[in-house]
Image 1 (cartoon, helix red, strand yellow):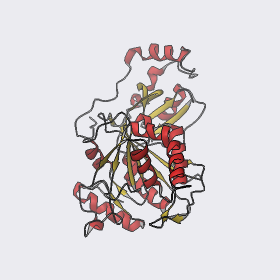
Image 2: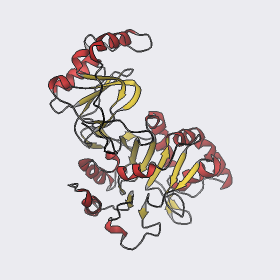
Image 3: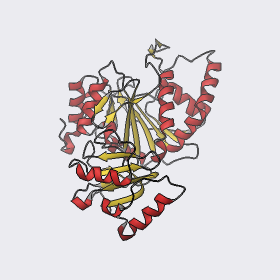
Image 4: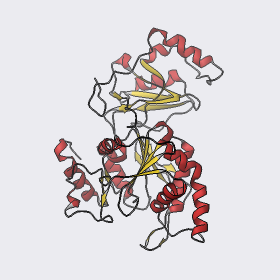
Length: 371
């Protein structure tokens, strides 16, 4: 049977059973749920779970104007398809494959129905995360840079954000990372000036645009934590989950500080309530700091969001020294060998071979083959 992240056996997806036809037909005819067009015999769709989403592992871009019945038939006819998710309102069909993750996460979502083609003997392990462990992870890719190659390497190996329960890649133009992964477009040229005390990239406007798209898509609300990961960070989601066991949600939210000098941008971790508070209050911070600095403060986005959440919106801020080891936060000697098993992320590794070698070193004790 499939296992959760603690190694405890999970029950397989629950088949709706002999009542599935009656149940789903009733839902299809309900005024609260748009008609799905061909839900005459959902019992033939194999194992079906209503109000469940299987994020990620898409074989291709979603197909539009489909019915539930069409979606499960399309999965049956594609030998690479091991599961599907159907978006009720938008009538979109997402076919799922066996990569980049070796298990799907079942996420509660009233807007979706998911299933597996068990009637043709195809199924896949499914994880239901324990409370506080579900991760939505994202990266921003500069299309003119080396970052596309790094993200493609991470996808190939199911590493970094592609080991999270849901992942997304953003850019200002469409970039195909893999067959089922295309960047989501943000309204920004992604360029920034250098400045401030440390001559850093003043990229706060860029990431305000990224967050606008993230909050519009509204995927973070399906998960316990949202994680921003720079493409040149070597990041281990399983190690982060081990850290998150010690941090509980707070009414206004909680976020993790990763450096004794203040939050650094390669890895940023926010609880669900923190994302809500940030979404509702970020413009308050823009006004506040424009007044404080007599114009835009000469900060990178990491300092802006840290000061905003901590000083203005009054969120809980927890320091985690093993969250990030990087050259700008006084690392210990020899840190670039990536051999410390308690470190969640190492940064920066911009060269493909250096990135690959760091991942290999870090995973060596786990007998993971990194390609």
